[in-house]
Image (tube, rainbow, N blue to C red; front, side, top):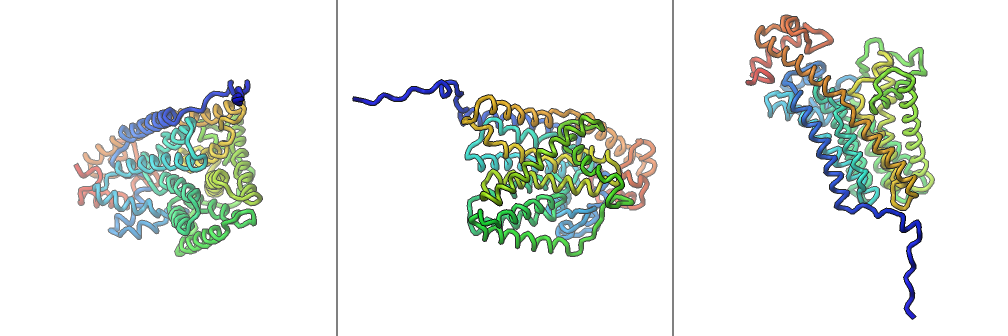
Length: 454
């Protein structure tokens, strides 16, 4: 007698079918495109071809006619320019010092970071799900506007974010003799490129945790540690501690505000850019969540062996925690409100990427529908809160208008102090009438560069 096929249980029949790969791809591609169009539109409208602020300083090797190596090792404040400096050397020489070229290069770096983050999610799970669209939604947010438009600097955090995603993707690659070398090389680039050294610190910690007996491939961990240690030794050659904060000291009298500073950094990321108890509480809750994911992932790596999920979560959250701790260490002596600076949001984004990847088991179809819906809804709200911040647009537009007025005033007067007075704007806030800026403006005009190249 032919066996009767078992009928589906009530729970099985109530379980919604997993979305098809085509539907998933359509959702992710649509969200990716919309986010990219918004970011590109911001740059198209508000990128102005004039140097501003720190650019007059960290581009010194270019003003002096030096090559890419000088740009690579150039130290600006506590970090080096690294790969960002090399790209600046190339972009400015090719474009006639068009500052907008660096802004567009930043968009390209963020696009690569978003695509790489999706690749990391795919490698962790073996497939993508529709809510993975939250990843590009976060990374392609206009929160980067200060680094892209105010004082463009690829090395500060935009390029380090892309390198961090690349480092995580390399870590998730199948075991091979080339894998530790690639990780070591990317870790070295992160170390030399702006605040990417936070990713190198996280990679070193994860590699140390991978030395436990629970991990079969401890030889790879040893090789990674050796390569990263060599990179650190190279980085320290000629390095000088430069916090770029007058009167910097550690610790500050109100030392408990180091934690508050970190909480405000995360609150700023989700749109709570304000000095309130609610913002501090929300940011503190996020900080505890990020620390919990980082510690839990490391513990699982040490006791149970590394998995792609725990490795990725530890690397992403560890990068953000290292960056936020270092920023609080360096900037709290200025004031607590420094935590609200827009340019600090870029390298706090890996915290959110780590949370999303760590939450992956609770987004699977096998999980109880109610729990899965809550987790997915939470992730989507998180992404929407970051991307849905429309504060950057009016600020970027106001800065762009002021820069254009200054350019017109300088072209009319060819005099730095008078252009400052007429426009009511300064392109070098630390010292508006700085002689070295006036001299460099004359050099740019003699060579027909930046806004003189018409």
